Length: 192
Image 1 (cartoon, rainbow, N blue to C red):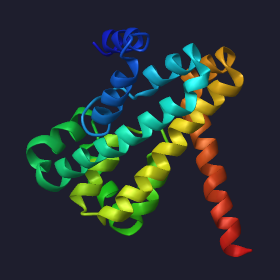
Image 2: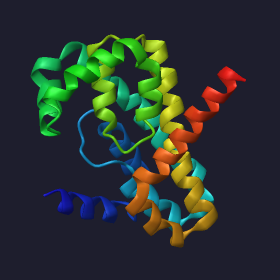
Image 3: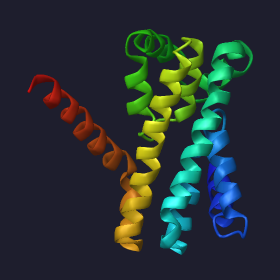
């Protein structure tokens, strides 16, 4: 089922309304949809690298706005909508521990996890459940999602088709390396 959905999204990436589809996928992926917007962003940037930054901006804005839907699900509809989403990813037992960490490190979790391939909807729903400060949630979401999508768009803009396979196969490695460098930079700044 997911493969068919993935194939369908790849076709939408070449559609004349692809940018609207990118915005829609970015929006709903932040709260309920299982496939990340990268499946549209990557072929769209490769098709027209001049629009790489525009596409990354659209994905970022739509994802942050969609994150508010995930936040609302966590804050208001957790038992009826949020819990089934968490269970879909088989994360029920671990979600309680994740929730506890959120109370202590909420902004950092949104910033760091929002850049990784970890389903962003888990972060947005947890933010709502724990009632993370809305301004902190919004700023951390803008930071994390813009880094995520602009990193992918930038790699494709500068390296083109050869980097596509690397990104698709090793997106976790790319974002984890970037996150480690970012966190390491903050640690160095703090102690220097």
